[in-house]
Image 1 (cartoon, rainbow, N blue to C red):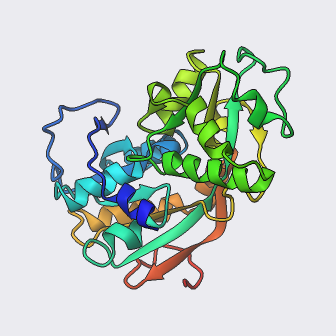
Image 2: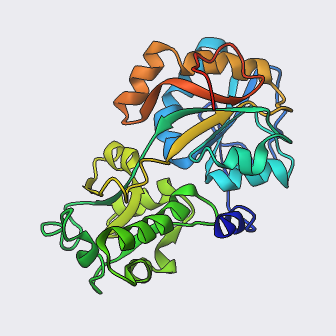
Amino acid sequence: MTARAAVYWAAIAANTVWLSCGREPSSKTPLRAAKDTLVVYVAASLTRPIQPILDSFSARTGAVVQRESGGSLEHARKITELHRVPDLIVLADYEVFPQLLVPAHATWYAEFARNRMVVAYTPRSRHADEINPENWTRILRHGDLEVGRSDPNVAPAGYRTLLLFRRAERHYREPGLAAILLAAAPPRNMRANAADLAALLAAGELDYIYEYQSVAEANGFRFVALPADVDLGDRILYALSIPTHAPHPEVARRFLALLFAADSRRALRATHVDLLDHPVVIGAGAPPELDVTSGR
């Protein structure tokens, strides 16, 4: 856990992406823009699935929605170091909450979706007709490939990829495999988050990427499903919370009611988000708008 702690506390420098009713305001746009404003920090891998629900909420309520998309560690740093507090924070790694945000910045968080890691590619990828679940570790070490991964200092997909390498070494009983896979995905092919990586694969600039299955499916990529003890499906959980000092908590609660309504659940599952049947809350003070099961 020492390495994980170092990752969490690493200095992070990344650009932020703002969306306010379909327009991008300047980087100086204040968080407290209006009474009926919803400021959301969302993990990059959930940006596309959640955006239609944010749009629907804005249309129904007239609220101004401001959305920042990026790596989960980047979002946490905005709160802990820059003191920029959103109304709702949605992260790709539930562990960021107890590690960085609870109890100083939030009293509860709700786990609400699962995911797993895959090796994603397209028909244009070199060796696309050869790769399969049995030979992927051999294919990806070919010197003629461009293999990408997310930045472990910013995005959970990045440090999960490093863990995936170690698990693959153990699963295939091949000493040194983790280092080989890491070398085959060099820093020049590393990007800030899962969404940026997917864009490069779609553009043909990369042959393969280590990616969330939901992102691969949503983009129509081919992918290699990894063994269960390699794909991290036993530990990848998305979580969300309304921070203690959220500027517009009532608006956030209204959005949660919509987010977990039946129609929204169906829409999210249609975009390959693997929702839990009910959110699982850890901590105290969660709003009644969450249809929850008991937490740990």
